[in-house]
Image (cartoon, rainbow, N blue to C red; front, side, top):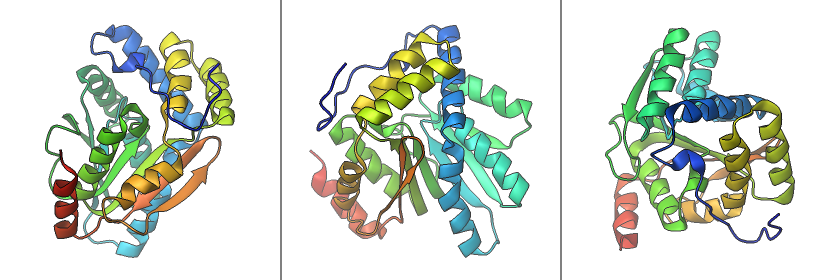
Length: 251
């Protein structure tokens, strides 16, 4: 087992292979959805959205985009919570994988959930317009340092009100929790492999905060969620300052 936690260790994740067999991909998506339920992922992401909805005081629905949505269990869980609590959300979800999107659409259709799906690359394609809240759950750790910082800028440019990033804590304890959780909730070898690899590739909350600060945001907030996640939220800076920061950092 890798035992040094001071630096990220990025290994290719099996789910990122564009040639992955569709049945194995779907089986892994189901396993990851179970892990999300076990860790209360939707509950953590919902909290800042509900706070913003309360402060907004009703009116038009908040337009929410979940990027790298995978099997769509995060927007689907948000849709269920919003429906129960009478919160108006207009939910969009995006992913680069057509297999994941097909699975996500079918899951949404089963529950008659009103979610709009888009196939796009968050780092290469323009995001939909008029987005109030951008969510990124368990995607940041897939990226290199440079691409992760680019994604943070992209999200800040796209969101009008709030950015929400949920990811894994990088630590030995988190590795053990994810290893055991993956084997308990799923029989997918992909989940068994990718789960622990995700922990080793994760940014610490301090590292993620530093990347956000370099975009001009000084008041980002971190919350920790049991068992092994952190939630990073911030309000996007003024568009002019973010635009200048983005171009100043471009190669």
